[in-house]
Image (cartoon, rainbow, N blue to C red; front, side):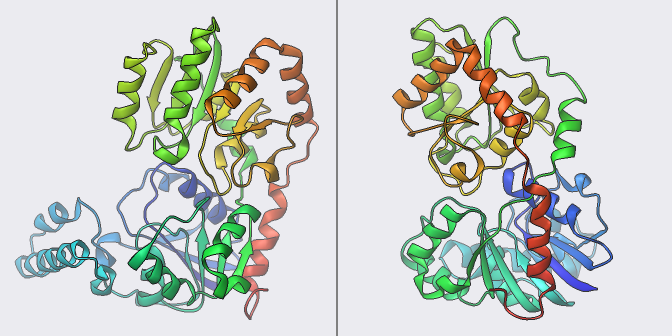
Length: 391
C-alpha cells in the first residue's frame, strides 16, 4: 500500500475543501494508507469523509490559528502549557515580521510515499517541503490567478520548485501558473477536480429549502463572499434587473470577509427584500435544485466547483468567462459564458428570464451530456502509483 499524507489549511465549508473530500473518498483503501493533517482546526466537512483516514492532531503540528492560544491555555500540564504558549508567541512574532513561522512547527514523524499540499493557500506548501518526509511531493493549485509579489513571490519560486509536480486544476490555471513559474513549467500538470455526482443528486433530493420564493424568478449563487467571487458585481446586476421590472429574488449561499460590506450595499440599493445572504449551508444543493437559474459572477476561477454541481442538477447557468468554464460548458448550448461586467451579465440573465424555451433547451442539452468526472480517478491513480516523476 502507498502511504499518502494530505495537508490542507483546514476542512471548513469551501470549494477546495469539498474537492479534497471527494478525492479522498474516491481513493481505493486497498491501494492507499491515507493520513490527513489540517493546519487549522476547521472540521465542518470532516464527517463527510467516508473512506478510511487517520486524522493527525492539528495542535501537535501547527499553531497558525487565532484559537490556538486559548487551546494551549487550557492545558492542565503546566510545563507543557508554558512551552506551547511560548512557542505560540514566538510564532506570532516571526509571522508578524515576515519570516518563516512554519520552521518552528513540529515535523510529522511518519515517512510517506506521497505527500500532497492540497492547496497553495496558507503555510501548507512550505510545511510539506520542510516538515514532511516523503519520496514524492505534490502541490495542488486551485487559484484562477497568481497575485503574490515581492518576498512572497520569491518564496514561492523557491518552494514550488522543490515539488515533484504542481497540479493545476484546469488548463487555464496551468497557463496562468506558467507565466509566473516558467522555470518549472515542465512540472506543471493538469488534473480536474473530482465531483461526486451521486452525492449531489441525493442531497438535492433530501430536504426542502424553505427560503426560496416560488412567486418570483429565483437566481442562485454559491460561493465565498470574497472579492474574487464577484458578489458586488452580482448586487449591481440585481439592481439593474429590478430597475427594469424583473420580478426576481437572488439568493447567495456562502460567507466571507465581504459579508458586512455586501449586506450594507444591498440595503443602500434597496435590495434587502430581493438579494438574500443565506450564509454557509452544508447542503446548498437543495437550493440549486429549486432555483430557476444559477449565476457565477466570479472575477477569476481555477476550475469552479459550484458550476459543475449546478450542471449535474441540470440547471441553466450564466457564468463569467473565467478559468475552466470553457472546459465545463459549451457556450450558448449548456451555459451562457459572458464578460465579467454588469451589462453582459444583465443581458444574459434577462434573456433567460424572458425566454423559457431557451432555458429548457439548455436543460435538455445538459441532460444529454455525459459527465466526465468518473474517469478522473484514473488520472489520480497514475499520479500516485507511478514509481517515478509523473510526466
